[in-house]
Length: 259
Ligand SMILES: NC(=O)c1ccc[n+]([C@@H]2O[C@H](COP(=O)([O-])OP(=O)(O)OC[C@H]3O[C@@H](n4cnc5c(N)ncnc54)[C@H](O)[C@@H]3O)[C@@H](O)[C@H]2O)c1
Image 1 (cartoon, helix red, strand yellow):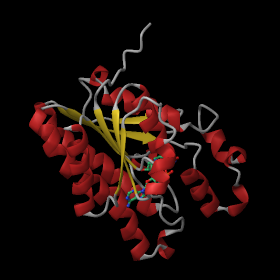
Image 2 (cartoon, rainbow, N blue to C red):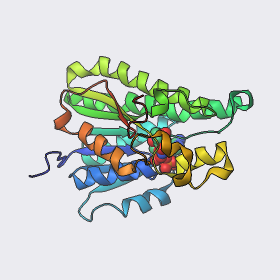
Image 3 (cartoon, protein in one colour):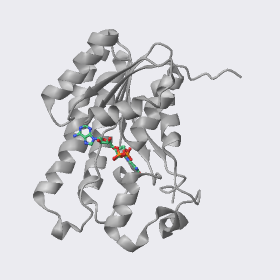
Image 4 (cartoon, helix red, strand yellow):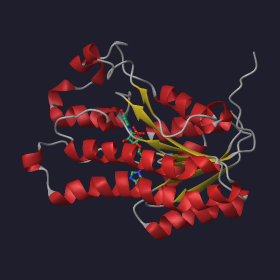
């Protein structure tokens, strides 16, 4: 059966595209036919991520700090200048921040997490939406987390920021869905990644490597997730197969938050 989730010719902007989940999503979107605008902090890391794309893929790499409004406006402008529009926006850049109890969490570190994970997501939507609203079509996918649905000890800033991403997603969906622009978010669970290792190591340096950690026992799927499994949901939400899906928060967590 032919793959129904095709994105031929669509223009997809992916932030955090040099990271584990962003690069997997960018690769899958490109495999499905999308033209890619890859956004991250380092040109060198972006080039490495782009080298993994299919040879036929068209891709533009733009360095930007998602917390800076001028740089967000810059990647949106670069996408439109290069490809004419933006059809898909995977608003994914994020940081885990410090791993420490609230009583020891510095205000500066707390604000930094909110700045990247909340302000960055807000600014991305603020600048991409006018492009999509002009064409009455588009799909925005924000990356939240299961930490946006339940609490997580020692990463309070991260947890607060991901709850906020779900709120931003729902507000944007209410503002935009009547126009044909859909806004959703994904809530990955424990994904085999640098970020998860950093959180586990921060909580207890003796608990790495991740595969041996007790957390796997609390996941009904009895394993960590793969970035490619998050990417599959992103590709679905980006596509016309998700034409009636907006304002949703899709968990990709092996059942971790089901109980
Ligand atoms: N890894 C997990 O288990 C997991 C689980 C749930 C949610 N998430 C979320 O998924 C997203 C991607 O995480 P990941 O695991 O790929 O992490 P990662 O650290 O591999 O990738 C994050 C990327 O975001 C970029 N980034 C950070 N701050 C930025 C800024 N100010 N401007 C531009 N780019 C910036 C980083 O350079 C990096 O390439 C994040 O939003 C994260 O919170 C991850």
